[in-house]
Image (cartoon, rainbow, N blue to C red; front, side):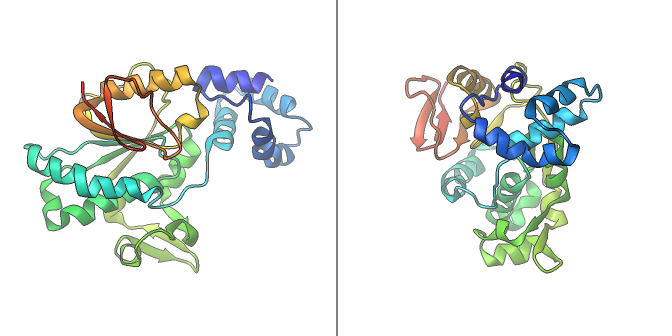
Length: 262
């Protein structure tokens, strides 16, 4: 299937064994646009010189359901281990965090809430802006809008819902301006060989993203993450993912949590 090769070559996403997923994800698009087959639709995507339909395709095939405080153990480790250490050692108080593959924004906003809750009144003395990137302009637009159905907040402490959200309608909530201002959203393809960052990060979240990649693509990406991390910085991946156990650059701290050691 040409579509499978296209996603692999342009975005590093392997879908050879996920043909049923492709069919499920594109069924609505085909119906809306009047195409009988996926091949017909893909030809339309390739023929669209504006590139807009390619963005629709990528969004459909890569966006998964997510929610606030997903994989809570990561935020617990951030609060109990990483932040206390950085609070003591970061003299310039410039805390740099990257949410890579941020999807519709729940991850970076949860991180921003975690930082706000941890630092409290001292937060004004810190630079805690979070960089959040994704390949899909559509999900980035959703993230910037920051309006979510109530079920996405189910794992949050009710006190956080009251503190960090504004209710809009009967079953939707908007992240408040204070937290929204803490996240910088940018479009970025993780397959880019060069990472355009002037400073290195203390924390990188890339969770449930590499499940789409083959081993070689994942290892190359981890290498780029290593280059973008400070020594002693941490990489969080999905709980169902793992790094090469013999990689000398990282120490496995806990399942799905790795520290850069060299």
